[in-house]
Image 1 (cartoon, rainbow, N blue to C red):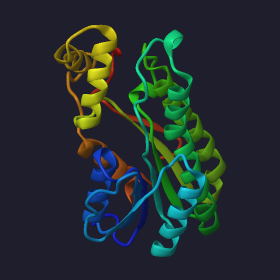
Image 2 (cartoon, helix red, strand yellow; image 1 turned 30 degrees about the vertical axis):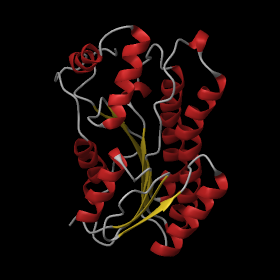
Image 3 (tube, one colour; image 1 turned 45 degrees about the horizontal axis):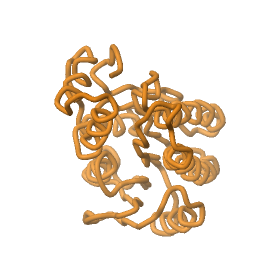
Image 4 (cartoon, helix red, strand yellow; image 1 turned 60 degrees about the horizontal axis):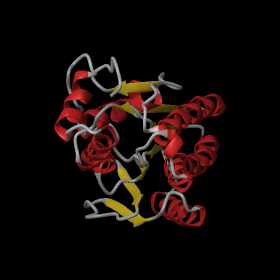
Length: 250
């Protein structure tokens, strides 16, 4: 069990990638506290709480509860995000733009600010932020999401430099197209915006990678577990794409 006794905090752990991270960390012996708008069915051994990551007061209450429950933090997975609206920038709704950036960036900031203080004081820790392959490319009709995910990488690089001398490592994962309900919703929106069938959009995502494949939440969890383990002890400031090697975006 690679993470026996480790204190893990995860944002957006109620479904999708976050729920997989909760399950996998628990299987490796970690103690896990997570938040989500809807915590869902909380696995045995975890504490799941409702919190909106864009709400500073709500996040403050969640993080205080996590600290009280765990007695500190060894690993933070700042995983919360949303796909945001799909439209050409000239037609983009400003409120939808702001909501997308807030969910992806403000949530990461609030979680990382809290963890940075605790981890720096104890002289150890690992932070993994969830960016996206879209944080390494431009994607027409997805400007808010792309902007937010590029911003995650800037936050990660800066935080790695600030916390490295304190013994804290900070990295980001960049998922490609991840199988699950969230991407099915994104496919439907993109297909509608581009006037093509959903099946064609699904194929375009796979065909744009060298491995001609989508990825799974467990693929991502494998990388996160490695990055936060003793085997990843010298890896910091890196954006690791788990995407089958993207050659082109849709």
